Length: 424
Image 1 (tube, rainbow, N blue to C red):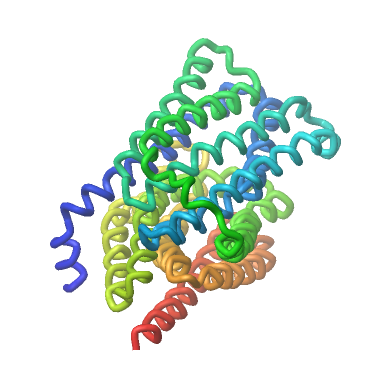
Image 2 (cartoon, rainbow, N blue to C red):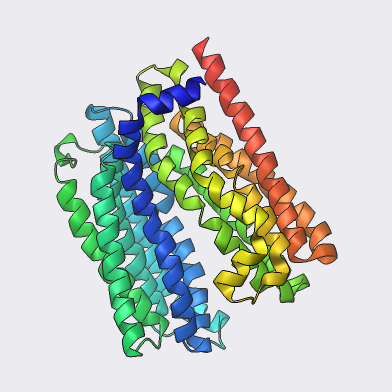
């Protein structure tokens, strides 16, 4: 009951901070819907190029400073002093350096990438991806500074503007029937990133402190934290795609049905990512200020709130999976209703792993997140090897469920134990 009481007491603050964050993340879900029309419009070869390029983009963004951004969010949120300003400056410098390095490697390795995917014409794609990586990093850095101060309303406005620019360009191309290449989509992304950079920079103009300078010990602090986050991100990247890769090899007929069900159940993740936008900097500051006794109750209250928000969707996934698939995909994947049912039910477990992972990072233990992902990966890959040959897509869903439960249980236990021992 104490968690319900706390949520009631801070309901105005939750609405003030949480609603903008939720709207902000909702733009990703709407873009996902627009992607369906993109897939239908692009010629098959062009979509294949887009799909391959998106995977390359994710690697490029991650290695191009994406792994540093969570370190900036955690470290710069801890206070308002000179130390936090120097940490932010150091993180920004390192993120920009890695973004430029990633862009150079993409351009220089264009020939190798093109020869590896020789049946596809990837001419110009590496250059476009380099532009996406650099502009994405530029727009993301002032956005992070806003989040360290919980200015979710400003972030919401920026994210909406970015979405409107990107979807507006692509939407015009779709309506006019001129969307023919993947290059056009990435061009829209670059333009929207640049617009978002201008908007974010304006909102965060008082959050930049170049006079605070940069120190080598601050750079080392950022990089030591970021290195662990990179390991966790890479492990998670591999772990979350093992099922699709193995299905493509062992049960190719189930790939589309499994991917369609995973996309639908994944819409709930916008609630979780929105909550993490607030939770990580909030817990970081509480930990730094010595308010350790309050952290666990705040995290569990966040879990409760997320569960209440996603519960209606989970009920629909579990009770009416066939009907949902019929409605969304016009009966194309209705026979795989059991996959959506189990992945939908799994959504109730995801807030635990995600929020306690963010909490672990906030209290200076990002290695807990790394270990959790490794545990999940081992369970997932092992069960996929055994279950996919027997049950196909349903086996992959069962393996994913077991992996998420084991990983979530582990990080909840170790993070809670560490916080309690720090309070004593």
